[in-house]
Length: 222
Image (tube, rainbow, N blue to C red):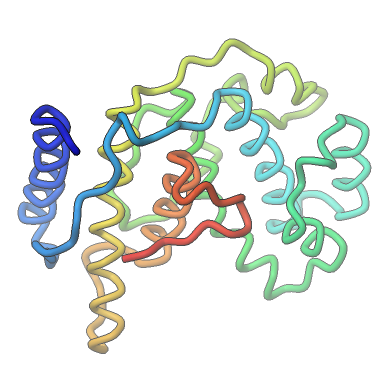
């Protein structure tokens, strides 16, 4: 049975998100339930997050034709990261069609969210424009020049608080519902970008181990 403080946390977070949506004139589903509480949530470890963002950074280079797939595969194997590449990512690296590159290019948003969780970027900007990874200082990025990505992975990163991460996860859960609702009702969503919202929701659900799903299998239920 949930105690009073837990119930207070649930409703407080939900109400805070709804207030943000109200100010932004985004449709709200007041019946959408609250997400997990801090007590119920396990956040991925800093090392796990750093390793995931490193693999994403490499696949992102393929998506934007900045590295050859064979070179990326060798790089990941040489850095002992190949075992952490998901089946979906291996499929992409072994057959990077233009369609798959386009799909993978959206993962810039996931990279940004994970770096935000590691306090390498300051904020999650309003989801109406794609983030620009070039805005991230080289020293805060896992893959650059002759840098050993394992130095980044094993660095003593400071994670954002569980409360901050859950606040973001709750907000993007509600953003995503609004985007899905607009799509179902054939309404163009112009305030926020549904693609950006989905990718950020995806990364946040992975961060909070939603349903304990692996990266390829993360669901963004609304």
